[in-house]
Image (cartoon, rainbow, N blue to C red; front, top):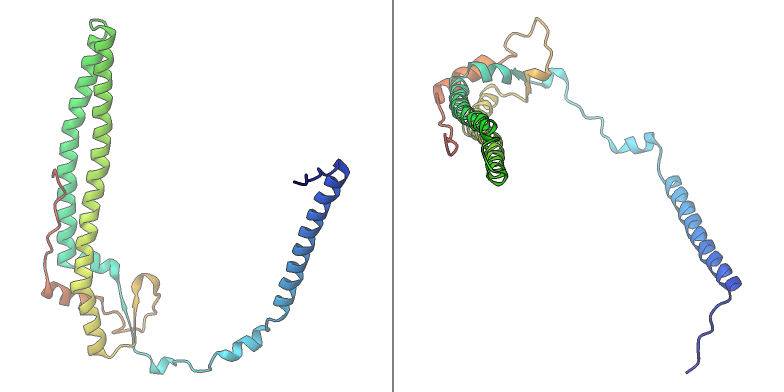
Length: 219
C-alpha cells in the first residue's frame, strides 16, 4: 500500500493560505450578490403604486367610544369579582400570618435551645426549620398566583360570554363601523352620543350580576 507523504511545513502553510483565500473569495461573491439584490429593489413611489386611493371619509363612518376602565368599576358583575378576589386574598393573608407566627416561634425555640442540644440534633432542627421556611415561601407564591389565575379566568368568562356579545349587539343595533377603547381615544366637547359606555354597563348589569370564581386549593 502506498504511503501518503506528509506535507512539509512550507506546503502546510500554503495549503492553509489557500483555504483562507478560498473563503475570502466566497465571502466576496456573497457580498456582490447582496449588493446586486439590493439594486433590484424599487423606490418608495413605485412600491406605493400597489396601494389604492380608496379611503373611508368621516361622513361615512359611524364611530363609538367605550371606556373599559369605567366598565371595570361600574359593572355589577366585575364589582362582585373584585370582592371575591379581595376575600380570597384576605383568607390567604390570615393563613400565612398564622404560619409565619409558628415559624417565628420555632426560630426562637431553636435559638434558646442551641446551647442545650447536641450539634447533630441542632443541625436537624435548623434543616427542618429551613424546609418549613422554603415551603412557606412556595405556598405564598403558588396561592397568590392561583388567586390571580382564578380571577383572570372569571374575567375572561365575563368578556367572552357576556361583554363581547353585548358590544357586538350594540354595534349591530346602532349600525356602527368602529368602536374604540376609550383609554386610547381623545374626544372633543361636541361628541354627544359618541360614548356608549353607560349603555354597555346597563345592558351588562341586566344580563348578569355575578360569576363565581374558582377557589384555589387550600383556601
